[in-house]
Image (cartoon, rainbow, N blue to C red):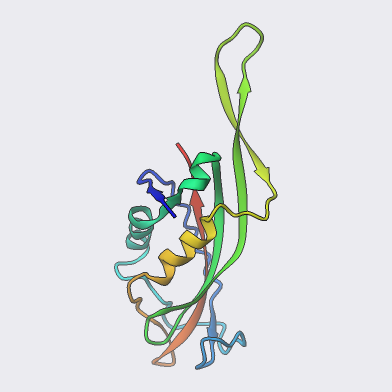
Length: 161
């Protein structure tokens, strides 16, 4: 499938840290801790994470052709070794640009975003999840001086300009 890279993506990374440490198995969803000494961190911090996503996130051709933008909410685990695991698409909000004609006699058009419900995510979720799954190794979270697994929630916004 062909993808078009768009560098002018508006990155919406409200790093909503749903910080739930996991047991030794990253497949487990049973939280062990609710508080950390240090949180897991992308190499270079939040600004570096934003830059990594902006530079590497692909905008699927199908979404561009259909004027689709949206927000992809990802859940993932940064394991005690700093690797990103269990990346899942938690939720996707899709919007489609609608062209609205100006008042009678005017030639101007304006765009209005309309939320759409669709079983097709136009590959937005897949692209975002693949990017995160292939991110560099993170600095793991710590609790009581030991590295631990940590679950995160990360929204990524796709926007067409």
